[in-house]
Amino acid sequence: MSGCIIGWSHSRFGKLENDDLESLIADSAAEAIADAGLAPADIDAIYVGNFGGFEKQSFPASFALAADPALRFCPATRVENACATGSAAIHQGLNEVAAGKARFVLVVGAEKMTVAPGALIGDILLNAAYRKEEGETEGGFAGVFGQIAQRYFQAHGDHSAAMARIAAKNHKNGVENPYAQLRKDLDFEFCNTVSEKNPLVAGPLRRTDCSLVSDGAAAVVLTNIETALRRPKAIHFRAAAQVNDYLPMSRREIIAFEGCEEAWKKAHAGAGTSLDDLDFVETHDCFTIAELIEYEAMGLAAKGEGHRVIEEGWVEKDGRLPVNPSGGLKSKGHPIGATGVSMHALCALQLMGEAGGMQIAGAQTAGIYNMGGAAVANYVSILERIR
Image (cartoon, rainbow, N blue to C red; front, side, top):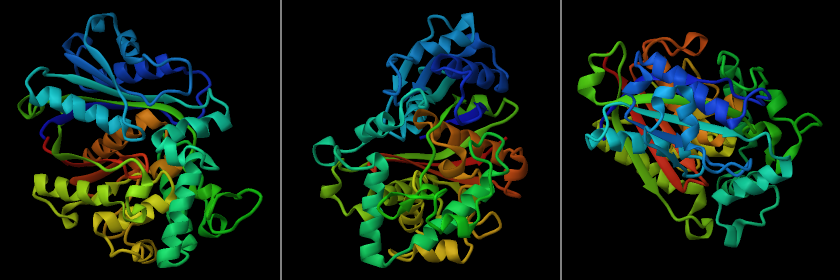
């Protein structure tokens, strides 16, 4: 799959009391179009990534038209694929460009989660699990990943300390992210200690092992390579791979994240790259156990050896392969529909050398892994700057 990002926008993530879903989508759309140096009338198609269910609004695609009157009558489509919704919307935009049906495609990812009460949020998120078997999981989706952590520990030993190191790394990185929900450097000792401020949430997962309930939006503008090379900036998709696995965890070796592994293999094959070619990775740390397993699935470590990756500093900002220099979902926040688009926008910012305190020096090639459910919908992008 080919195509380029030529403009982007990113709201602050967190509890945004002055924004509703409509304003988040419209504002991000307008900012991304302006960042691309386009007029709203230049946009040929719009895709809006939104998981939904948190508020009584399940038809948000046309909210993007509120960005400018010139967008009226532009085709706009909502896309949903659990926590990988944002990447799914980007793929639809890339398909539209590759088919020659559109020259400029706007993709917006947005979610307004905090309007729902806490208990209801947990139940809504379980819609990304297999309801027949997993729908009554205590603790909601945290409970699902708590079970995954327990099974991982049974197979490979208790690696709570490695998970705490992941949390501490991502919180430290998130301090430098102006869009992040929690810009606080929580050290290893705090993350590794069960306390009143860091209680157990589900299984071995502590509060610091869990991503945040968030509001927010991000947007990108896509076009073809030929057009992008005539624009002020162009971030090229060397690969954009999708792999889906079975929904029920009972049908899979859940601690292997096989769909994640296959998506990385497919992306590297398409891009002609290997892990050694990447300068940094943004990966889906909805829970710290997920990032730990993803180290193994992407090929940084053998099965059961992911703890070495964080213990030996390989994924720190100055390590051999920095992971989540943005702070990841753990610090940045996880407004479901926005997450995948956010990952792509922040990687584009890095590759342009404009990431400020988040910047990885000399970054030329980025990898992104965004997943829906428990490694069910798996998306990997490999990006490079070509202008």
